[in-house]
Image (tube, rainbow, N blue to C red):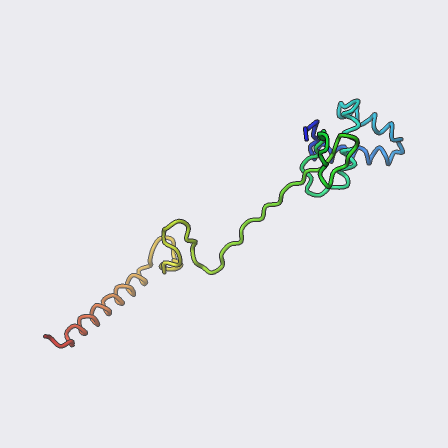
Length: 161
């Protein structure tokens, strides 16, 4: 396949609107082609490719990226969704929809290459962005003093060798 020309989707969509408006006004097919030719500065073969591309774009309106006009080599088959005229194939190229990967919901961080995976058991949510309040500091100090006293009592109660 050798590309002859291509038409972008935004050009085709605008031309489809113009063609619909001209059809609603009761214009003939020749008048519509002439009007589109002067609007988009097309003539001859390129105008006939454009008109055919409009028909293809109208049939494949959703997710259209562009319409390609290609010349087929001898023995070469046209793509399945194309319109073929002699040795020319006109086919739509659609946008590929990329889906975002699903987020992990188990609460663990990803592994990646090496590194620490899983939950590291952080401190949790902070109550204040400026640090602990005086009451929280006092409670933390009392808790640590109580745990130190319990450890000292355990050591004192343990038999000596």
